[in-house]
Length: 582
Image (tube, rainbow, N blue to C red; front, side, top):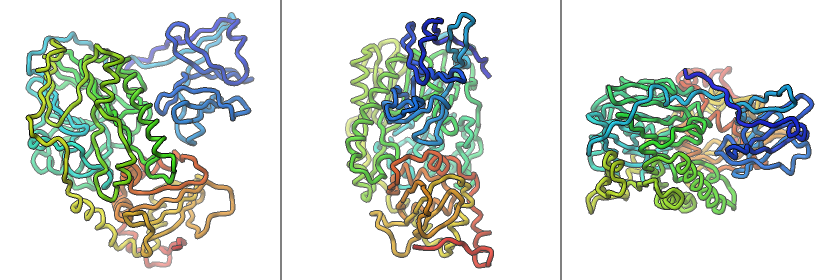
């Protein structure tokens, strides 16, 4: 583990410290312009960076807070109670990273940031000259890249066939005809996280049938990346879980390091690959990779760019969605451009955003969920940082890294696919995958109303003042007369037929029946329902319940419900549920 270091980030003399008012104070460093928040109370001081932990927005004074304890993010209106360092909206979400406040004997104070040493600086290596063709980066589709490093081939996040997030996402780009062959010939594979557009079981099924022992590397996240492997029946025999921030040496010249995300350390990761001293940084989907600390001036940087990868606001019944999405995409575009400009990579490539809501039933989602284009992001970067070379990849396109570094203006460093090669998919095997999901509809367990209590008891979420109504629907989100329609009161995990009299938050969720029942039957996380746009949601009040969604999307038990035991007990008196149908 890297040693922790202490750095003074802001100093106030006695006069400036004495002028701090009770409550929230905003201060800026005269040295580097970084902004900080200092909260003063009779108990002393608390402090943090003026940066929202969600997506890095700046906080401003919350004029609705008469007590002077909260600040509001200018990006998404998240509120932070600086007196406790807890986020209030959404509730039960994050804790703000806090700075140490040291009082000086002369009455001044200083803010101290405790940070580990940047782990990639351990055992530094001087870059050696790369020969033409020695390092080649081939874009396949979405977040999947093949990186040839000398004699070894490193594959990132292979999603090459089938849908992701149940039936909500489909590949936009047609993978090259030899993409699966390339996967099966890889010397090592990195999978960044468990989301199905990165960990694709349909793709890995092909790999397992042809080469099950290929080394696969994942980070040591608290939710194991391959938690679903046994149930998937995909047989892979060489999965390696590696610690964060430690170089993994493959040979004399090749090593890599996996880093965690600062916002979702429980599941999300990014990677630095180094070959002969040349670094490739792939931040994938991380919101704040490595907490915002990243190596500068790497040879190649790759990151997501598109947006649109969330159930909010797409699955909510709100009229303001289109304008909200437009503003969010613009913010994301500016944020990515600013990040790239600050890190100054030699070459930048946007990827991990090439998906489409292709199924006909999701046409409305597709039309509304407009995404950023890689061309627009690269144009913005070119205008702000013209020294950074940008690459908008096409399926099968190849970047010769050594040639691009030596001759930045040489067009031969990038080889596009031959003329006439299909770039965009125009056919997806919808029926095969949708029928697999819908096969769960007729499962025996759903003939017993008591499955509801059994499932939510297994899920383990309770002691939270939230009532959720779940309605099984058709593809158009019309309730089914033969479907289940029930309430769950998560305060005491009861199943009322009407809303309780006490004050409470309420969510109503309509779920496509096939996806919901498949999720329940197999003990899947709810990301297929939510990120896959397979439900429609209304809420009262209009508040995001982070604790609820985080539990069902990340923290469900690792083993599926014991439905065999359930069926044995279903007809016994002790197995009868208090749950009733509407």
